[in-house]
Image (cartoon, rainbow, N blue to C red; front, side, top):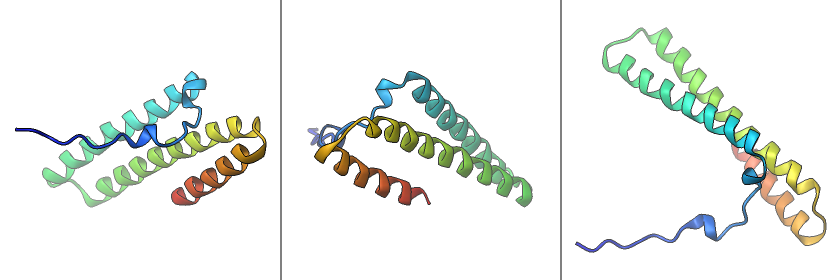
Length: 104
């Protein structure tokens, strides 16, 4: 059976500098892995009839971890954007504003 390959959207967009900051990249990945683990634990908790309060606490922790990772992505991009000027700066600034608002 033949499958159609979807175009890689990441090649259509400019990168935002995570590869230039390995410390930030490691922090982002760690936060997302922590959220991933918490999500698995929360699913098990729900499936096994866990306490509602525990489920809500875990979901809040997952949300916070993902939000913090997102804000770190934006902060890293902002540091790189500050060093630019001209049209690239204006375009990146607009993109950063949209990303930031999507997390708010």
